[in-house]
Length: 179
Image (tube, rainbow, N blue to C red; front, side, top):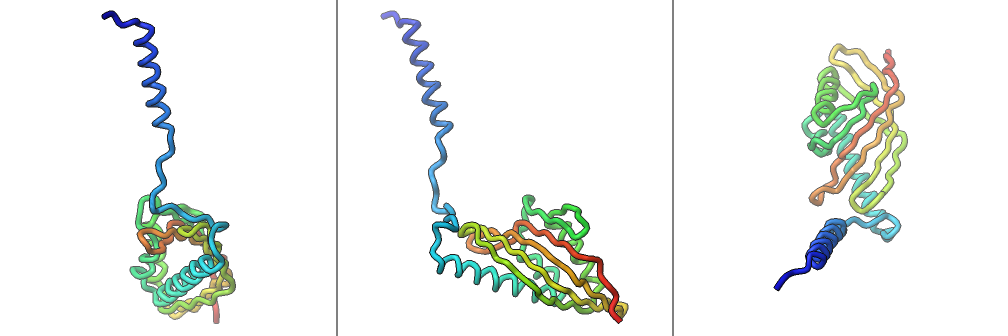
């Protein structure tokens, strides 16, 4: 039995078409799908806001203790982590840790005086946190300085059941000497 070339080409073309269609089909949703904020109940959104509020309160307590190791546990240590430093430079997790460790090493005390915060729930696993504050420091030399205007943004992502900052941005006016 002789196979018609048109039939063979048609079959090959159909197989290629089915393969291409299969490659373009979106992956099936898994258990880790996110819920958009518009689909959340007010109670669910409020619970997330309270989680983030408590988390950042703990974070800033560690900042005041000048404990860089504990502070960095609030950030996700991955190659995708990004930071924008007060001087406008970009950094990764290690650069952010070094920058803050260098600053902390010069300080004897540091106090954080919150001015305003905003928590914006984007999804049940993504939250944008923005803050403004004043910081007062006593350097190891005894000099006292004040950062009157510090503002920042943290993007929190829920990873394996825990909130971690995956992006951090901070802006600050130059410190002023306090007498």
